[in-house]
Image (cartoon, rainbow, N blue to C red; front, side, top):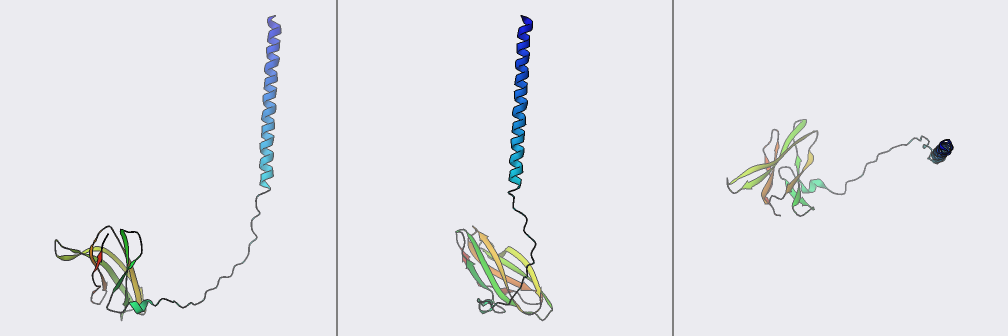
Length: 167
């Protein structure tokens, strides 16, 4: 009897193994066929075409020099979040030299020292004819009195009117 049950057990294991191999082969074939059929649905690369770019002159509708003059700095507040203020300072810089270097400085009034203290500094420059220059200074959650100074190489420092920042 032991040989008969061993034979049945062996044939059952063999059948299970055959069934497993068949399922594995079917699954592999299905996955391979799905990948093959989806590969054909991919879009073909676009044919190379030549693109011509052109530029044209356009008139600027906002006259920045009307608000800015040599020797004066105008400061305007830009809209933004409640306690984050962005201020734009503009002026016209003229210089007899070929190149101009200048430094913007945002100063804050200190009631303790009773003097203007440096808050932010930025450097820039250009070459050529007189130019309208602007600087964007961002003040976040620091109320007080401020002013903008512009120091141009070879010229006197120009100072804006003071303005109050509140939060």
